[in-house]
Every structure is written in structure tokens, then in C-alpha cells.
Image (cartoon, rainbow, N blue to C red; front, side):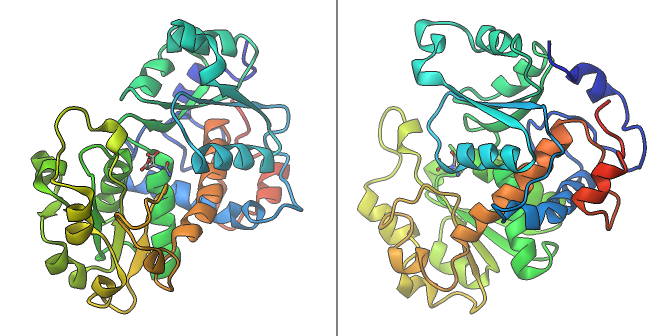
Length: 345
Ligand code: NCD
């Protein structure tokens, strides 16, 4: 059995310092309050130094087992979770879905229950079906962290994007942020929209009308189909990939070339933007389609910074998933450990 029953810890408030986390699971940003998002980002701030150093490690999660279970391709996210877990001293296990019994028809829940019988504490899941991490929380005792479920949410990407904006702009409130591309199939767009609107940004989505769900307006998001008109007004532009693997049936826009011409961010277009605009992209990049190499590698791009911010954010999320209370303001990871503030419930 897992050493730290998630069900008990999830419902029990942290023993000591307030504020406390609302849950150990992280399924999406829709259900988090602005305060809890800020709390996770503050926690990430405390981990910034550890996240960027190979020399130092925390022992916070010593003896804990973090399993990554990715039933969809990933490069950055899986590596980032593994590294975050190791820098907190956890043991890690990567469950390779392709070569597992999942490919023999075993259900996700059965697979997860079998892995859990080996005493795991945190299950990091990526799955093509929206809502699958949530349904796992009803079946397994481990804390579940969503690493991307279908077109639903990718909460750690949303958090690291906000963390990157904060690092460069010093604030999120009042900024005009454009998310450009395949919004319809993008869990990254959804998690960004939740986090950014909760923190007071003015959020725009932009792309061909077939790739923008109209109901987004209900959530206070503004819609544009004219990138040239929108770009000069933006403080931040987050460029998304066309998720061709999710587009079934007839094409949703005339051609890739046409898409690149109307919605691709290239050097000429970037000249019309504010001088201090931040150019973001969650990766993987399709260079020459949604973004040209000169822009992706240029001075306004913070794409690799986003990856670095992902580590600290994921350390914070694993800290939360392991049932440790948030650090008090000013605590360093070491101090928080020795004070045993709100250790695992
Ligand atoms: C994204 C994803 O998998 O949702 N990538 C990522 O996690 N960095 C976006 C994408 O696949 O386009």
C-alpha cells in the first residue's frame, strides 16, 4: 500500500501553518482559486535555486516514489517531472505505456491499481482522454498529477507559463496576453486561460474560426481572427502548434502555407509588436509553420526559459502532492524541512 494515503491527506487540512492546499491532486487550473495559484508559484520561487542546480538536492521526498505514466508522447514534460522529483530526493519510475499491458487492452485504472500495489506515492499521468486523471483519483490512493489530458488541461504548463510571465514582466494583472493557433485542441490554451484570467490578465485567443471554440467568450476571453490587428496590442504572445494528430476528418484550414501566412509569427510580423513583447511557445515547435526560427531563437523569445521555469513549478506541485504544507513566507526549502512544518499527514 502507498505510505501516505492520499484520500486521508486530501481531506485533512495541513497540520500547521496556514494557508493550506485545497488538495494533493492537481487535475486542472479551472478548480484552483487565484490564491492557490499564487501559493504554488510562491512555492516554486522557493525552489528556484534548487531547480537550476545539479549539485544540490533536497531530501524532502526521500523514500517516496513518483511514477510517470505517459500514455501519449512527451519530451519536455516527462523529463521535467522526473528531474523535479529527483531534485526533491524522490525515487522515480517511468512507466512506458507503449510496452505495457495497456497495449494489450488493460484499462488505465487496472494498470494504475497494479502499479500502485507497488507502493507509489504520486502518479503523474498523461492520457489522450480528457478527464482520465480525475477518474483515477476515485480509484487510487496516490496523489494524481495531470500532465495533460486530451484537450482538457495541462495545469503545470499553465503554471509555468504564468511563472515565466511573472519573472519577465513582474506582474500578470492588466497584461494583454494573446494565445495564437489551434485553441480548439489545446489543453495548454485552456490551462493558460484559467490561470491568466484568474490573475487578472486580458486574454485574447487568435486563429482560424474553425480552431476557436466560440464558448470561450463566456469565460471572459476575447476572440480575434486577425493576427496582424491583434499583435501590436499584446504584451505577451503564446504561440501554439497545430495539433494535426488530433484533427480527424476534413482539414480545418486551407493549407499549412496559408496558415503560416496568416497566423505564423515571423520576423516581419514581430516588427509590428511592442518592443518588449514576450514570445512564448510550449513546444514542440513546428519551425516555419507557427513560428520561424529567427523569432523562436531571437531576443524576444523566452521559450527555453519556460522549460527552466517548469522545473521549479513541478517541484512545487510535487511538494504539494506529497502532502507537505506550503512554506511560510521567507522559508528556504532546508528550513522548512527541519521545522517539519506540516509534514505528510
Ligand atoms: C504540449 C502538450 O503536450 O500539450 N506540449 C507540452 O507539454 N510542452 C503542446 C503540444 O503538444 O503542442
